[in-house]
Length: 244
Ligand SMILES: Nc1ncnc2c1ncn2[C@@H]1O[C@H](C[S@+](CC[C@H]([NH3+])C(=O)[O-])CC(=O)[O-])[C@@H](O)[C@H]1O
Ligand SMILES: O=C(O)C(=O)Cc1ccccc1
Image (cartoon, rainbow, N blue to C red; front, top):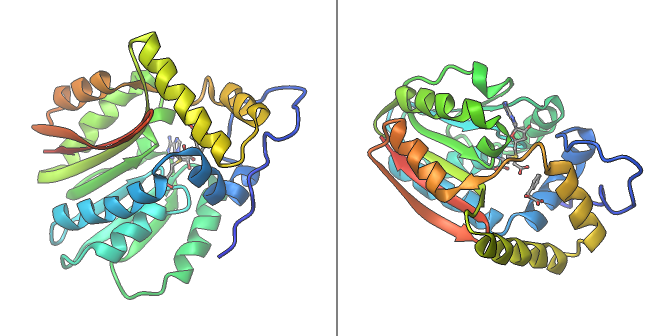
């Protein structure tokens, strides 16, 4: 399938508006995320591998902040346990509308996926074996993050997992600069101009709030997870698996 190229921040903007997952972003989202998140494709396919290992028969798997459903599609291709289903939610109506179209193209008779437009804070998490927050927690107000992770922990079966991918911050200015510069080099190598990089950075400033890896580990432990480890890092982008 061909995708539209992201040029949302290519021309100078008179007024900087906070980043939103609206129709314009949805139309270019596969291109935008691929060119902006180092390792995105590898993270998606390996979430399928992790989900296949930890999915339990007769349980729910959740894809919270599913966007166009890339995680759900990767999970449904890999999970072989009987009587599982995938519950995918996103609070952007435009994402869900397009996500449903893409899901309808995937006609393999595998694990059923239900895609709903909802705030993930309103979704009941129960009888879960796999919960995925793939670059979603970073958009939730920091003050609400612990309660959400606690709720996910409570809804997981013993032995179930949370897969958590995030853009991270670094406590030390030198490390922050090192990783951020390399991320910007990655974006430039993928065809973004300095103007696009700086305008998108401003638009994301109040919307995407990264935390340190230590902060994520402490929160997972505080929420009751018995094990958490990093399985992916490229520059300031990481993914963790936490086991109940
Ligand atoms: N409160 C909320 N409730 C539901 N959805 C939300 C909320 N806040 C933000 N979102 C949704 O979280 C998604 C974050 S993108 C996830 C990529 C995807 N996981 C992927 O693997 O392709 C990451 C990125 O673009 O950097 C968007 O679709 C938001 O609408
Ligand atoms: O582009 C960035 O700088 C990012 O941090 C990743 C991203 C990707 C897609 C939407 C919002 C943020």
